[in-house]
Image (tube, rainbow, N blue to C red; front, side, top):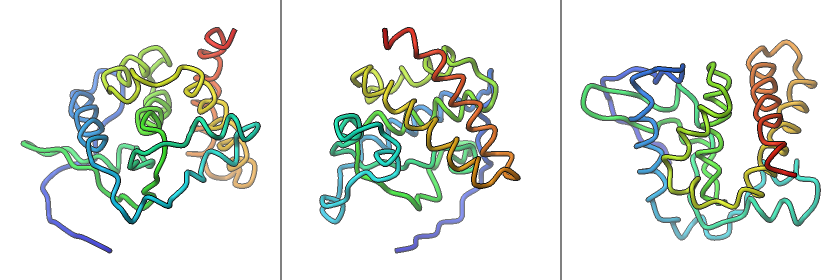
Length: 178
């Protein structure tokens, strides 16, 4: 199903110090409140689980949340009085922390440190309530995913940027794995 609405706004800005960041987090929290529709009950998370090291790690990405999964500046529009999550073309059923985790990767790619990016995600209950081991597994799976995609498409600069962001985040999370 396609739905259209004309809105007056602009793509959000993920750079450090952006005035859009609070609205971005608020929008992710609103998305997290949307109940999983009946049609999605049979969906399984398949984007990151194939990059998990084993079934046990992949199980950490499963859940009952309806996820956007394509969190990026173009998909969160800011207006004078509202913010919209748009281009919801990859809806997924999975662990609720995944959308805030996708935000972390995008924030790092936009110039945030991993610590700063995680501090924004910490404003999302789905992140704050997540098992840190599940987040660590997601970081590793995301790194493997972006490395694979960047290898296949070396001309795609955005994939290189996402790989670099995932590497930075993985390096930051390693102490938490010990």
